[in-house]
Length: 142
Image 1: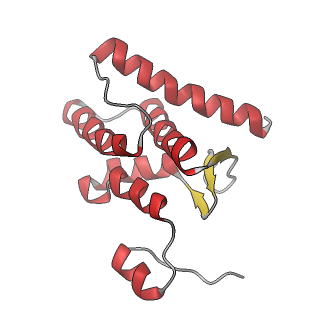
Image 2: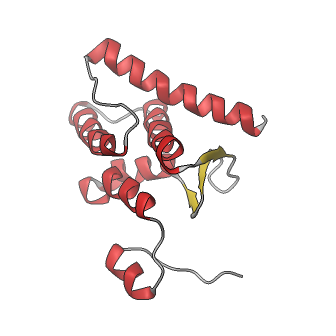
């Protein structure tokens, strides 16, 4: 699959989530804005209160989160062999929104999507102190 086909597929998946939630549940708060990341946390909590969230729904939610980054932060969808799923390449590095959603589901509200998107918006930390304050781990480049 070409990068262009991957990007189109990811965008369509995110849009399918929004359209389906609007049609089936009347949920209209997902508008691909950075502020809508808080609504993603609310959606996850609502879905978890009923049943475990199916893998396909986790994927669609992750694509939505990634599309927030693409549309608002200049990102682009790229293949990622490490997680065997798409990632978002940002001007400041890479983000793994599908993994983020899975982590949020597994660990709960303390690992919020809203915080993840906010941190992506302000960019990576530049010092060890900044990293520690924001809960990041800096790695040396090889």
